[in-house]
Amino acid sequence: MTFMNPTASTQEITVLGRVISGMEPGHLKSCRYVAKSQAFAEFKRVFGSEPHLLAGVDAAKMPTSFWCVPAAAPIDPASLAHEPPGWWYLLASRLAQQPGVYHVALETWKK
Image (cartoon, rainbow, N blue to C red; front, side, top):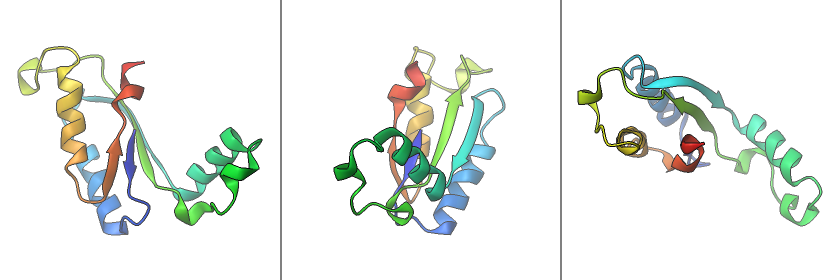
């Protein structure tokens, strides 16, 4: 998952979406954009039984994100580091360098 800063601009989000869309075929199995409202709905679903966590939080404070699943292996191993899971880290690094990105969660990719 690639989390944007909650204050990321529309332009920064659009640019990251274009970077993801422009990745070589076979690097990502799937990817979907999660808007603030969707992130807040998920946050409420997960933490709904803990009102102290919900206090003062609304959709505007949630980050948008891109939930991407990398392919099992790149089509051209020479195009990325081939030491598993090294190519994942290279892919994540490319995403993390984009303006407005807060964090790329690699843990979710390894499952």
